[in-house]
Image (cartoon, rainbow, N blue to C red):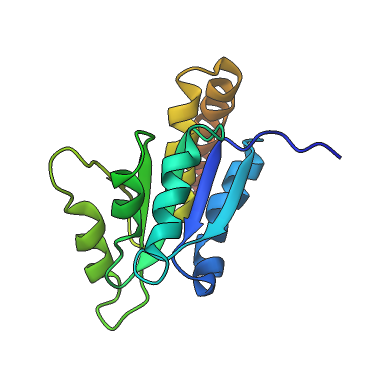
Length: 166
């Protein structure tokens, strides 16, 4: 069975991040975006993380998503070794409830950008990756437009239901 070439690489800082990052690959699957998963640690396997990022483009990836908690340097390490867009997902995995991960992910030096979503925001990371890919993929852009239309309709239904229940 031939699998399509992955376009998005989802990198977990630890296997224990699997559950909170699951919405990322579930969302990419909903949109039909081929993706791959990997576990790399910015601190425990820095060479592996650097190698993954430096070879990502030549392997056909177009966007990287990195989920990490605590010091959360994974997205930064990936961004330092690639020209691909990197989306960081700070994870709530420490006594600071993800604020440490948020600060570590969002506070990048000039020249090493990392797009950062909310703490535990794996779904939004995937949606941002889909939006990046949709810049050059009209079919994917259409699926995004459909999703947004469905969200609008759901809010309008909720508004009507609220008004009629009063």
